[in-house]
Image (cartoon, rainbow, N blue to C red; front, side):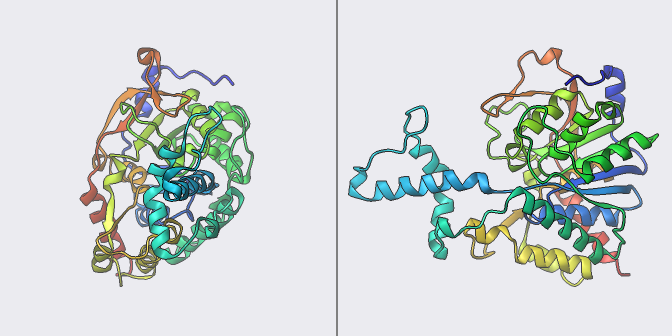
Length: 375
């Protein structure tokens, strides 16, 4: 697929931090955990600078963990019996793959053991179930905020791309295309989950590459050498990731690991500063107290724990860019092993990338807005 070329001067202009009120589409896997709800809530509370044109639900699923988790469980049991005399777990290459899987999933398995849960008992939502759950969750946040969601919430893709140019059409994708084509101003797309909807829109309507700026949070910084395989937003749809990176669309990358990861909050902080602030604040507290990932991950308590509210980083740059310091860097390619590839970086189009985040400033603004929502 060939996309219209954007000259680098124009690209740099469009990558400048926004000023004033901005038109925004939020592309979100809202029901997969709790961070998307915080991001949507903040956007609704900051209508002075964020003009929400649409909120589009994305597919999500943790099912890609099922097989490796089961393999790690088998490897662990084999090692515990007969002093490791059982044969190793061999992959398609014939290499013993049991140890890496066991190391990666060992803590998860230990927590499940403590909760008395077996791997077979875990329920993994399908992508189609995920998008429908997210539509309902988006509407729930709007309702708690006292904002009418009519005409604003759309169902996106119900599956991931299966090939490099395999767009997944949906009402959400078509709405994104309509909004991009119908606006004289830049349309910012805050993608806070897998990027299937954005990639599909670009494939169906390549002309919108010149109409939108895509913000996306996932993975490691582009100069980090580690594989991005742990990143849910990236690994769910690798084809979509590559489409966006290669399209040349103006792109603001918000690394989740090391940067967005700083946006952690504890239960005592939530109870101290958010509980009792109103319906929206109480919804966020209830989500924190009853995190849907806790049973899946075998986490049984909040004692000396915090949780990362990753997705606030995209909204933060739109609301107040100084909260998320950024630099201009070459857009990497995505290698087969899911590491960033900066080969021939000097020939690549540039992107803006977050290098830090003002954790306290972000939560201070969100909590202040929540406290003032009912005054």
